[in-house]
Image (cartoon, rainbow, N blue to C red; front, top):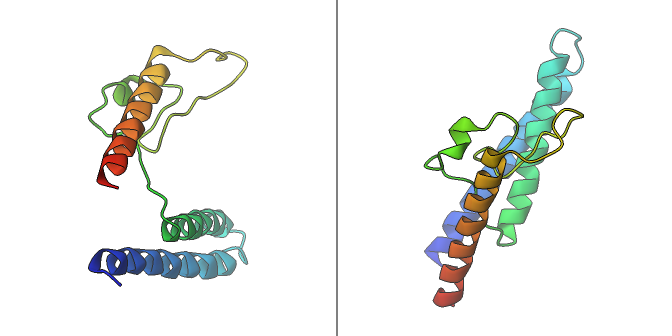
Length: 121
């Protein structure tokens, strides 16, 4: 096993450990009405980490929108560092210029990374 793969495996194992702790805490917190909201949050976060750990284990790359993208700070209805999004409601059916800019920035970033991976292989 190479050092790079060993480092990735450690990250995956840490994700699984944190996800397990969050699941246990979510069960504990769900038993009381005063902490049930925390329990729901912990369960959701644990599930996201477990899914990410599984996908990372199989070679997935996580690519987000960098904070250097100006549209991230201007958008009010979608787009975040996690990716291109849109808040679809009755009053907001069309994409805003900021949402389009975030989507283009993410697409360009994914394409650059794909090209680098292709050149490296």
